[in-house]
Length: 170
Image 1 (spheres, helix red, strand yellow):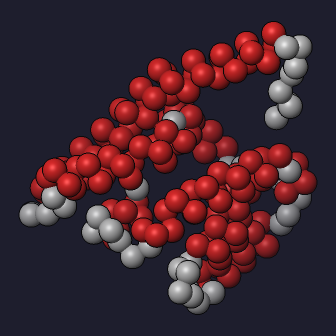
Image 2: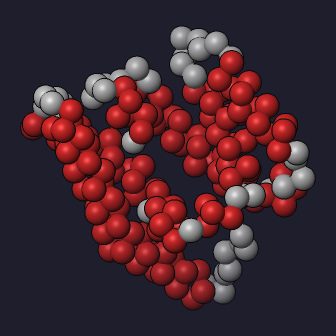
């Protein structure tokens, strides 16, 4: 959402990267989580250097998706696992809803822009517009978690247990 706000346009500079970056980020996150014990041994300086290198690599016609998604994002996640404050209640709440936020925010933005137009006008109108957009996105993500994701997870677990199967441990 921050990238969308900073672009200040409904179709910002790197909009074409939204879907592949999100998909790549999801699967990279899964791989990183699976190997988190081994990655905990990587020195923080190496991770910081990877993040700096990602932003130093010149953008190509494809945009910055590969260096950011393959270097900066994983390095930031591995560093984040070392920071206890990231386990605070508000951030855990946000993390639980992150997939729904990812799925909801772009279509919601498109609907709002199509019916209302871009958030323009005075600074206070733009801040209120974006604040309302973020609040609505979080509300819809919370409802999605409670009404769709959690019931679906329970049903999938029931289905697995009826067949005598167990999902892989995290």
